[in-house]
Length: 270
Image: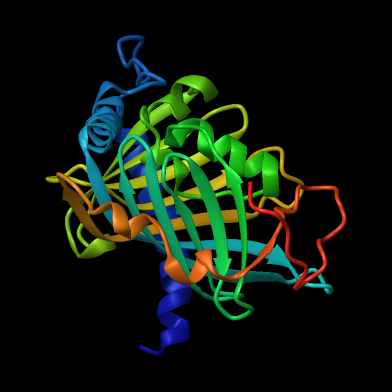
């Protein structure tokens, strides 16, 4: 039998079989309750991940952030940025971004934060709060510096779910593909976002997060893929500074909505 004839026969038989199966199935009863909007198993997976991250004194990981942006003709284009992250609670962070785009380095030592661009040998420095949580907000206000992975380095990672409020959360199943390990898949939704998370079934560490923001006009997809996880007891203080950056040409941070500082124009130290 040819492929076309087989498809035609299938198109006739399948609806008949489905109709016969439907006729033999008993009608739904009032006892068939809908699953809860917030499934306890999904919440348990999220809480285990948050507890693992919050209890880590120090950690390092690689985060590949992929985001969608429309081209001039409206076609969606995808861009990727790799961040190599090292953190020591409560007051130290290093983020090395080798590419794509202009490679840069971010250092925070509990007193100051600085962004160093090796290709131009320029650095911006500013005073910073004493802990990571308020420092992330300061970095955003000072220069629109935002890390897509910031939820995993906060002191209370689960706050993102509590602040947003979840309209639904359910357990999808397990994957043996993502992150070269077994992960639990959880889907969550709030008024502002819909997300799916792949979390290690044994180590409770995130491997992949995909988010769509409901009210964003483009409904673009944002994805962060995690790898090379290391949870540690301590990290040397020297990791969170750069001698080259200290001697680079100084420029001010560039707050959103202000003119770009002139390249190569030095400024006084904070």
